[in-house]
Amino acid sequence: MKYVQPRPSSIVAALYTARDLEVDVAVLHGPSGCSFKHARLLEEDGMRVLTTSLAENEFVFGGQDRLEEVMRYAEEKFSPDRMAVMGTCVSMIIGEDLQAAVDNSGITTETIAVDIHAGFTENIDGVIATLRPAANIGWISHEELCRQEELLKAANQVERLRGAAVKEYIQPSRGDLKHLVAKRLCECLQEGKKGVAILNAKKETAYMFSDTLLALHDLAPDANISYSANLEPRGLPKIRRDAERIASSMEKKNLPFIKQGALDEYGALGDKIGSWMHEQNPDFALIAGVPHAIPRDYTDGIECFSVTNGPRQVAPLKDIGHAHVVVEIDLHPKTLGARTILESDFGAVLRSMI
Image (cartoon, rainbow, N blue to C red; front, side):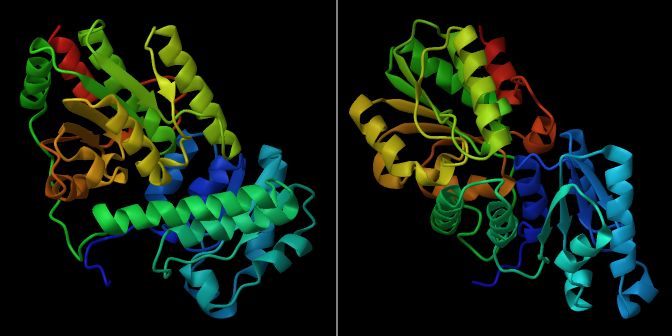
């Protein structure tokens, strides 16, 4: 399918993957404006992002010397433990050899070269392009590489079947009004209905999506609700630490929950979580993060309250029968650099009902 709506960039995906691998400095080999927004946001999360700032003359004559110079500068300035050199459309077009630049630069820092550009159909190509050299250098095992590749395929399939990639174009939406959705959720609680509350979030977004479950528990600590969260500590280094921090915070707040899956498994957990939902036989379900990972077979007949951070995810969720969909606008930028659970907009509305 050829999309006419903007789609995630494989260069940005590569940068986030470097962050998850605990890379201290990433060097983008291209123009200074390439991936500017995400580069700035990732610096909020502790990873330095530098650029070789290629100019017009270097588009023609090449910028290998400039790349080597910036790598030496990064090593001297920041004393990193790990670095990554990221390709861009420009470096690909002019045929730069990133690995040769790493080898010739004279740096001693462990560094991977990521041959990537923004022309790939799927952004997961940027993830795989980063993980493969990471496995070759020993930052992750080859078993973990294979695991990550399978998870990426599962996440992509979910987006194609029930997510923001299900159509050529989806109209963005802010979703339902949060106070009306919160009011209806309160009515379910007052009527004594049985519920499930599920965190199935992607990576660091769980720092805010988890607050939705905490807010529901604050609102009705004695209600007949079973809680589940994908907080098993597996995956790349940062992802494991995030899961441990969030789980610990939820436990300290006396929220009873079971762990089902890891933060990087959100796209592959649909049947597992769905089967658990079926066993619980709830009247309603509050699902935060990636609600569309759960196939419709498991949610039909259940009043679903879904919390997403994707304006283009509202219509697909409505199409598969989710009665209430709220959007946490700008959630992802807010969770970059987070180390503790952050209050969500919908969580704040729920608490106002107490």
